Length: 129
Image (cartoon, rainbow, N blue to C red):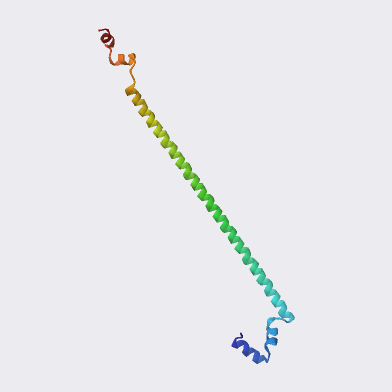
């Protein structure tokens, strides 16, 4: 479809459609060179756009990789802290358990004669009676 401007220009120049298109499409030697330069510029622009898109994609992949490493390091640190905390709790529980065992042994153990003598110096006298 042609615009009214295009049709008006064709009437002014007294051209038919094919000659008008030939004249304005750059089929002349100068026009062909111009069209080729435009095409080369367009290709170069496309190459620049593709290169920028590739650089952007690579930067995004690098960013994602760095984030993944950071997350992995945070998870490792959290696991290490949890393991350390568990070890501390185990050590504290073991210490408490050992103390309780020592206390229960003290309470249930039969005292030997020297311990009894410390508390009861008259033990020999009582035994002899």
